Length: 296
Image 1 (cartoon, one colour):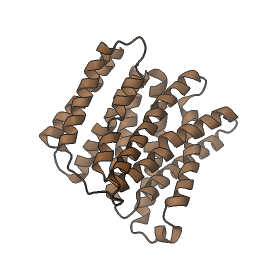
Image 2: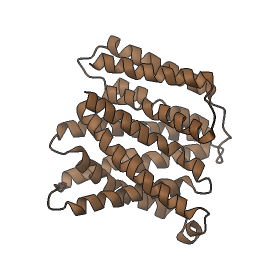
Image 3: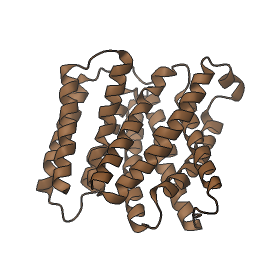
Image 4: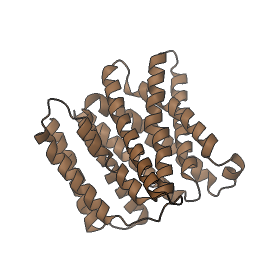
């Protein structure tokens, strides 16, 4: 169990880095940054598979179909829905809706043998932390599209997409224990890379415009770094956690992404968090500990 918990926390720490990347690359669109990250992930995954072609198993047609479907749910569709939601409803409301993902994963992924009484402390602490974080979040600008309720619906769809990915991915790994975490991460990566390339082809900047952007070297470096760390390595760690832990405990560990993202953001800004934000982080951590105790 300890290995799974540490793997889940490691994935959260790597995912948290993504929240700093847009602030470092303010002149690049979200589509370009996300496509760059997942294309890098796909190229890396394909390279790892090519290097070990004789040693590593190849996916069957059914396994490749599962990887494609789950990569759409957890990567391409999730991101596209989120971008459209932010365009219609602004930043704050979609972000808070996405912040409920750990609660949904915990509720829907509860093991049959685990009583609700055991899960309740972690849920209450996480919900309290989320409410505190909402109170500390300043309202963002209105969405460009002006279609607020459509944006809310799209954010809910994005939340449902990643929640479904987390639950189905965990269930698939438990049904297929012969597939190790690294191989599954590579198969997901190739599928995600193809989806990201299509996303860039449809909605991204053309090559001349992309090449004319400032800090192109930094953009490439961050795409490679997050493609390796926040995509490939984080997916391997998350797969390890999903194989060893229940979906409800994995859902609780997703909260660590928020905690790490806040720490990285405070470090980037060079400022201390407010007392309300510190209290919210403390509640998140207590919620994780309560959930680990309930599943022990």
